[in-house]
Length: 395
Ligand code: ATP
Ligand code: MG
Image (tube, rainbow, N blue to C red):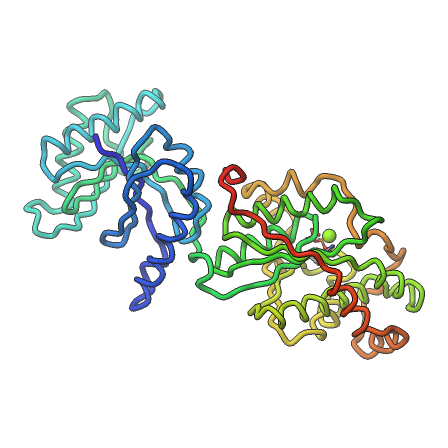
């Protein structure tokens, strides 16, 4: 019996006149994510996208499709002609499989959507008829309030029968909301920030700062692995890597110790701003979170923001750490993030960082520094790598 993955599109279907643009982009993203794995035709019909299953690789297909933003649910379905005998065959097959996997299931409910309004029965009548088929063939009962499983029937030109609706991330297709430069550290937060903005359709590239040889090559490899994880949800990405050791040394030599972190942060923002301008990024993204550490007070964020005219997105700003960790685990970045490699921020960490900096105060402290020259030198030595693209790297 023919099988397809039916993909529900959530808010994409609300996109009015632009819907086709979004759906076309989504189909492109699906094709890219399914590179190197067997599948049949991909087509769009009445608000859903379908991927034909042509071999025994459903789990792999589902895992890849979960990485495509714009998909809300993935339903592995049997597709048959809209003909009662064929529908009954599909219903029996899907329920048989479900009960084999879940022998404790005792109750069910049928949910029908009727796309083909010319069909002689309405959706209630179709559900009743399918319910009758299940009752006749299996030892289960109907429970309309809290069933153990649903049997879904989408009746269109063909009929789609399924039980599983696997939740995907939703969001918007990659690149439908501009390009962003993510400040990616090796911590837990920034990969999650990148994921959340990519989910809203931002095409994300990554900028990482290190203090080699105080930070190691291993530490950089770890961050590249995180970038790769982000690219598996987005597209191939550019990874900019900038050594800020000379800048840190200059700050350490010339500025008050308690302002080390905030002034370093401003340099990160200066470098991000330059790269963003030169490469036409629409926004800068960070993993900052209000009150989490000393530099992330409202005053601290204001002093960092002051550096750039670009809009700075901080999607984690109001989240609790525990929720951020939940997302990091869900997107498989957590285990990499907690690997205990050194970070450039810990190289010159002040004992008591300033909690209430002001723009004027910090600008005064920066006077002995040749900011433009330091930024220019750091950028001139930056390395640029392409990340992603390889099929083996993707799950
Ligand atoms: P993370 O878990 O993302 O490292 P954090 O809670 O440790 O965040 P900070 O170290 O204060 O917080 O960093 C705040 C944000 O600044 C990070 O989320 C990231 O966007 C940016 N950032 C910090 N260090 C670096 C770095 N070495 N390279 C690039 N960006 C960085
Ligand atoms: Mg950090």
